[in-house]
Image 1 (cartoon, helix red, strand yellow):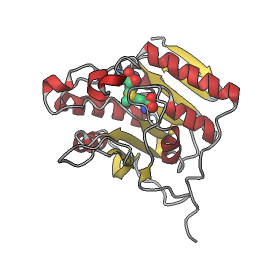
Image 2: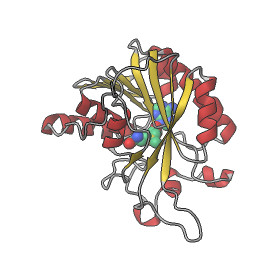
Image 3: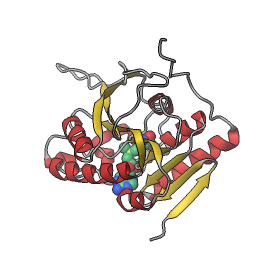
Length: 256
Ligand SMILES: C[S@@+](CC[C@H](N)C(=O)[O-])C[C@H]1O[C@@H](n2cnc3c(N)ncnc32)[C@H](O)[C@@H]1O
């Protein structure tokens, strides 16, 4: 099967379903950095199956971004689907590679189940603290964090630089996707790897920009043509304007 692809600098972007594209990749990756559709945004089926804009955006922001795909699975099918793609991603991961998967609080248990069912060794959870800029809730706790469930493809040597175990930064002011993440967050997460990064759910290409800033090869996959185009455009523009410079020195050498 042939897929539409774009090569931009050291990045290769695929348009299509990650489940179909992953088995066709011949490269091996040092990291899988995935921000899949959470299939969340509610605790009941009718809430979960609403449009992504209705689930994840306030009224005043509706219509700002295209809808995105794959966000209506219930928990059992989310577990089955996550196990499938995580297994296919592991098949193209180097020994010792890191797999880091975003999740919200509702899908946290099922995401760590899927990671392990797919054969990755579960190593921990890195919270992304979105700061007090997150919307408060009267009489309740602010929903202020998302999470990165991470593991490795078999043993990983205790060597190289270290990275933070919690990232504190607000959501980006200017997003390119309903669920867009900060480029700096992606940079921090990949600061402990020095090889190619695979991003099976590319959205607006945030992980690709972080790879460009850190000089890492990148492969991104996106099934929605509108977001595929947005990602291509962001990467082309960043390449042209030369704005892709590393935001911070996240990693630090371990104490001797
Ligand atoms: C949470 S978003 C990623 C947002 C991204 N991190 C950003 O900052 O822009 C998940 C993306 O995965 C895409 N997607 C859903 N199912 C997919 C599939 N089977 N294969 C590839 N992409 C898929 C969605 O269309 C959506 O754009």
